[in-house]
Length: 307
Image 1 (cartoon, rainbow, N blue to C red):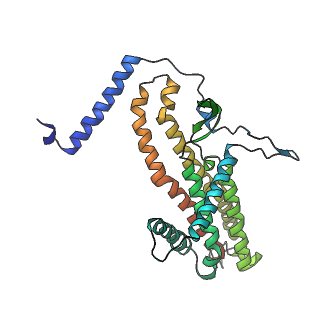
Image 2 (tube, helix red, strand yellow):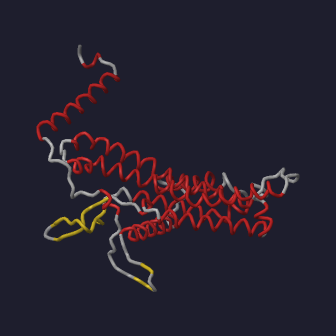
Image 3 (cartoon, rainbow, N blue to C red):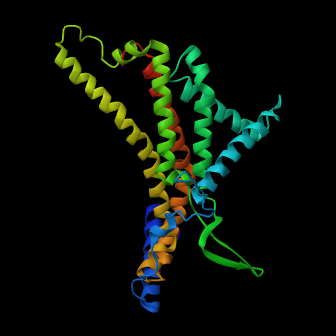
């Protein structure tokens, strides 16, 4: 039977089986060097201080996470200013893409969850939040010379080894963003209703005849719900970005190094490429979209008459 007569499914299965057989053959030929005790995957995410700074006992050292934050901030400001000065009546491909991103932030994220003056007031914040997180996520998939414990020689110069890292894969960064969001929507709610009416709005309508103990119990549930948002909003972004980078680390060769089986790289590298495309093409944008959308929902809920 010729290959042309096989179905697409059978061809895929044959390619997959050949790929597995090739990896097994390499493993049998080259064997295993045993577990590599020197390789510690967690060290890839350690933040060694590049420039030690301590003020009043507070550690303000410059490290890799700070560098990525500065880089993401600079990219967000530069790209937005650069684009705003080059808008044309007949848009090119770049402007078309930017207009789609603008429409996403204005109509889907902001307009879909906020109305009127509230939407106008909070659109700059929500758009900035979306693009900052998006840039932070995207540059996390660009190899940069930031692995200072390891170095490579290029034309006689020792420079840090190239590595993948994202500031949003460090829990402190998503948590700081979440604190800004959490405080902001409470302030907006108090500004819209006043202190007492805002907290009264945490109780759903239809509880007029309920006894005070029941109202207090429901109010405390709402307090817990708002407190949990600090965890859910930050951990969602952090966990997704960290998981993506861990998958790339292990599938891209880390597992082969850790187990001392070089041939394993032939099996895991195609997976790493698939994961990389998936992370860059979907996850980085999706996480920025979810974070900004939930922020808009929280603000909308804070200004609503009742939750």
